[in-house]
Length: 392
Ligand SMILES: Cc1cc2nc3c(=O)[nH]c(=O)nc-3n(C[C@H](O)[C@H](O)[C@H](O)COP(=O)(O)OP(=O)(O)OC[C@H]3O[C@@H](n4cnc5c(N)ncnc54)[C@H](O)[C@@H]3O)c2cc1C
Image (cartoon, rainbow, N blue to C red; front, top):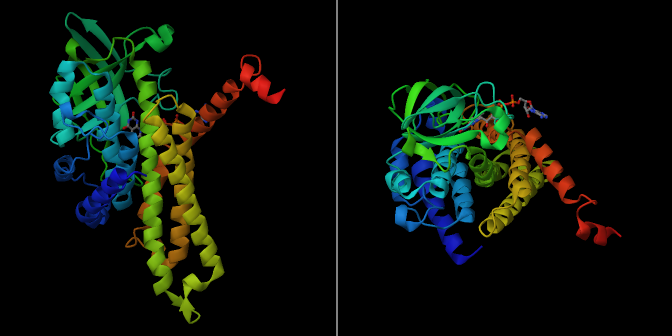
């Protein structure tokens, strides 16, 4: 970690400890998105970490973004998730694929936190098979597109001012050339959102459905090229999974923050429970899961800052961290005993928040399939002469 990255982490941590952590329990309990935080996060320079200075960002790259995600999630998992949807899913993709006038129009407001962003691919009938089963569609008529259909499970959907929305724009037979990304703004005729959903965890990070009924989208709101949305979606998922991995890493750190003082304070059989070897073993498992997840995630982030072609590892670090975060949260509850089971303890919230990372952005089953498939294809003995040479 460079000196600059260490300084940056300390700055984000100080912000998160002051502005986010004291509100985390209320955000979870009330299930209310704290809109005022967005501008504060913008003023603190947290939103445009992968966007150039020209558009209000700070151009620090994906490792910095992942570290920010970790520190924010350590303070509140829900704010972390909404932050990722805004700063990565929406902002980063918009920066990468928008033309100059779209960049000038949207990026400064998103980087400053005056606007909230979101990204919508999932639909009621299109989850893991998001491209093949996509039924939201748009047709071009003169200088507009007319969009119809429903998107669902969209993080920040109910709060977003601008959303990247994927729509089918050509026959499904066109395969990877049948989807287009659009920039949809709150208030466009024919577009509305439904009320936020009531969730197990990540409460306060609003999730909702988007309804399009003959929605008029101006043609200048196409993001990238018409019918090139699949490529944007797939490349976007690589960065998304990497940045999201900071979420479970931050939640694991929060679990350790919680149990360590407790293991000193809580005494049974005349001594701190931290003296018991079974408690120490559980602590060791928590610590090594955190360290391994963090090291893998940072390594991928460092490499991603130089080359974005790391699909199996961006997927891998989120899969690994998300599985461990659920177990680490369960370990925290066990160490805290009855106190961990009570809702006044944050331990249950950590567990509920951690679980989403095994589902959102593609489930862990799909991640297993993707990693296994890539590794198998890379080592195809028929085609890979290097592999043959190595194993001859
Ligand atoms: C809190 C939250 C926030 C979200 N935010 C967003 C967002 O901002 N934008 C967005 O577009 N989407 C969002 N999502 C949706 C998320 O990306 C989808 O939930 C995810 O892609 C899985 O789709 P699904 O839930 O429809 O599950 P399904 O695809 O219906 O899967 C159901 C089960 O079947 C398994 N399964 C499916 N196919 C296979 C297979 N081939 N082999 C083995 N098992 C399989 C899955 O792993 C899963 O266990 C969010 C979801 C949640 C919970």
